[in-house]
Length: 201
Image (tube, rainbow, N blue to C red; front, side, top):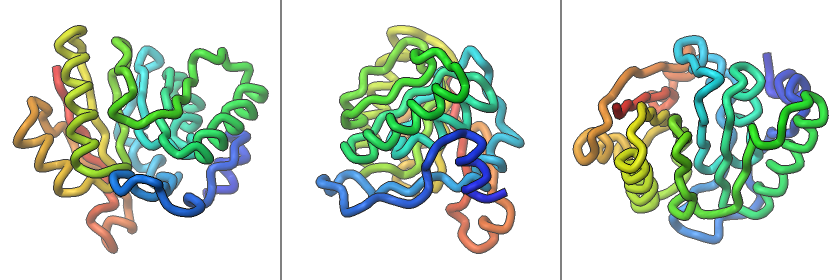
């Protein structure tokens, strides 16, 4: 099933990348996680309705609406690009209209990742290589600080995770590698086509 099928199912428009370039050297160009990848991930990784998932660099919100549709989990998007933020909110309006979902189950913030205030209920964090290792370290530090204040099981999901990201998590944080999920066919051509899950409890 292709992008058009899923976008129609979810009543959103998430295809295409980012127009122009990021205004910051620390932020990478937006590309949506392929639906094929999301299908592969969630065949082997389950979420609960009680989870609250944060997508850093959410772009147009594809992951948010996919997760909410299939799992009913509360979702939060964090996006620094103003144009993408507006497109994500337009998608939210369309999605809410078709699904009668309470507004507070889907939140989208226009801010830098390191400026997002971690909510005590946030327990799943998704990164599709959205920014530099410097921003990643700062964001992980915020997550760890939140964990100290409100201990809970936390998991990080990396898609297309850079070696800088994985090295930092595995050597400089208490997060432990939980599992690896590869995307069939795509992984054979590119070993970055995988998801890595890290857990802290």
